[in-house]
Amino acid sequence: MHRLVVLCLLFSLVSCLPDETTKSKRDNTNNVNINNVNNINNVNNINNVNNLNNINNVNNVTNNTNVECTLPGECEPWQTCSVGGFCVDVAGRCADSTECEAWQECDGTWFCTVRDGFCEGNDHCQDNQICGPDHRCVTNGPTSCNFTYDSDFPTPVNGALKSLTGPYGFIDPAGFIDPDTDLGPITHGEPAPAGLWYMTPPPTDGMVPPPITMPGYSDNMPLFSRGQAWSGTRCYETPGGVRELSESEAFDFYRQIVERSLGVTMNTAANFRNVVGIRGAYPGRLIWHRNSPDFFNDTIVLMWIDGSGVKHVREFPVSTDTGDNTYTSTSSLLPNRLYRYTNGWHRDYNALAMNEAGYSWEYNTADDANANGHWDNARNGWLNSGSTLDYVRVGSAHNIHMGSVSAPLGTARVAGWSAGCQVIPGMANWTSFINSAWTSSGARVDYWLLDARDLDRSLWGQTCTPDGTHECPFRIASLPYTHNHTTVGAQSRFGEYNCSTANESGPEVVYEVKIPTHGTLNVSVECASPVDIDIHLIVMDDPRACLTRHNASFSRSVAPGRYLIVADSYVSGGTALSGAYTLRVSFQ
Image 1 (cartoon, helix red, strand yellow):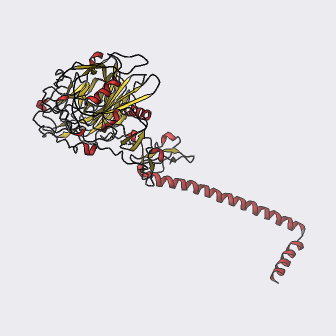
Image 2 (cartoon, helix red, strand yellow; image 1 turned 45 degrees about the vertical axis):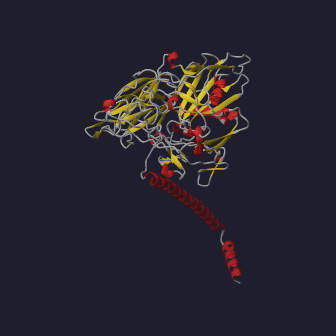
């Protein structure tokens, strides 16, 4: 009934009106519609303003200020200039690590990157690992190679540092020795072989080389299993987990260790011999073991590619440090660099002889100045005694030869067999090594000595954001290099260096530089008084491994390898003169 009334009423209103009136009403209806549309547009305009305001509000939340701009360069590096003329954050960029996920950090280019020790996907982990739900790599396979080193060798000892006799807690200034001082060659005091015998090495490219002169020592040390020809794969324990590698893969792995850690390119020409020494790590276990003194507990690896392109690897135990003996002239090679050897002689038999002098080049060692039989350096874990510290000096005659010791390997002592040479234990191991290492008299061999703690962490899938600390130094990726920075707020670990008596106990900033070839490294520092920043060149993260130091600039001949430059704050009258500085580094 109500519907009929409404319909009738509507019908009467429309049908009973004169034509003009009807037209007028239609026009009004159109006007109303247009106005309504305009009103809608007005609402849209208001909405647009609101949207812009919302954007601005977001800007206010993000930046706490409305920063106006006309070009992207007027904003922060992680921002861009919006169409509304305000600086807004760019998706995927960050101002600091609080804007990243818990497993990320904001890097120097304002991108969220994976934190050291974390992963984003399986590609950040080792072959035997997967990226877990907490973004950490977890082992997805064997966790051990079942080596017997831990039971074969005594429990590693911690090196006891010498008494802190210096006024700043490091060295006695009165005992300072210039590291460029040549104190003469080391003393080869091991017993001479009772006789000599001759061994014919395998042919090289179809040519049979002359016989190798061998020492007539006698012992019962068996051939180390990894010094034999390969059969199948071998297991490796690394800081990133366990790896199972073929001989070809192991060759590539050791090559990566050298090239990434030292920043050099290894010579892989056919039949060229490379030897890799790893101080402080057992063969196959690339993990620092604290390096107890006077044991054959380091690694030496012989690598070559034959004329058919086949890659070969042999691994042996070795001592890369001086033995615990009474020589008055002993010293250990400094690690993390290349040494050039040759097929030569040692004690009347063929061995790999140091040949840096053949290139008119000097190299440095840590001298046993106090004649206590070992290198008193905090980095290699040696126990020490006496009142005089040992120092870096010019070295000579650090050969690679054998030591005639009997089994078992874990109890055999280096003792007088090494005054700093790289010594392989036992006749069986030496025979296997030199038979493959020898090519022809006078042929060059490259020896790469590394400290197990300084192997590049990227080898294990680990990264860090360089910040100038000892744990993650600023990386000098290319030369020449200039960096403006400050020591204010930095770490303060090194108080005095073996290359100077200056009080450097203020905060320091650390740089890592990898040198690919022999040449001269030039380093300078500039700062405005009263700031006083001094620069030091060291071969490893130890104040007693300093090669040179200056308060303004220095030039130093360096071999291919890894070095650290430390910008340290001088202390005067008990006040650390820390502050802003400019570091410049070049190479020629």
